[in-house]
Length: 235
Image 1 (tube, rainbow, N blue to C red):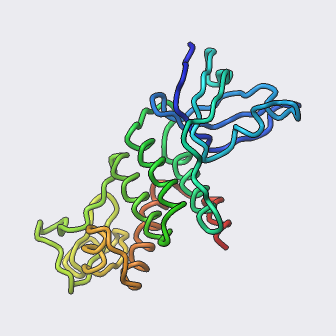
Image 2 (cartoon, one colour):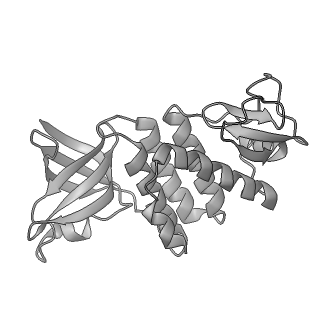
């Protein structure tokens, strides 16, 4: 198999043998996959400066099996986002989410575009936490795990801003005290917070705290027991 001129981003890289490396890449048309970049860790390799996270690349690869060989690599015509200070660990965080939540070779062009937009948003925005919550919300939606934020999942009635709810994974919010199954795990959250997040508004500090707890609760379910390494960068 030979692929040419494919837009990709590098999600992760690790050494392989003396001068090579294995790259986990996210491609627009082939999804997430691993490729071998032979000789690219050599001091004389021109690829050392190009094969960097968050740089949009145009690449070729060829070969059969789970790990084809990387061929020609060119940086995209537009500049990479200037991820400084707190924006950099945020970008590594979204890389790890994609690595953990996307299956290899599953094509998600909409997530590729979301990822690219979010990198530049992180570089330009003064509200990094908002950008992360919006990325998490959209990522789950594109993966088929979209959040129900405005309808009581049991009654079908609209969420009311001054009521308290219990949020059930893969079900949604249910007015507190109205459900019968006491063994089901749920997260307590204000109706106002749900409605604000539905409108992409996290300007209120209490809402921001509620939604951060909600997204951690949901992502922990989909990620499993293995903690995210990138969260250590925020400490």
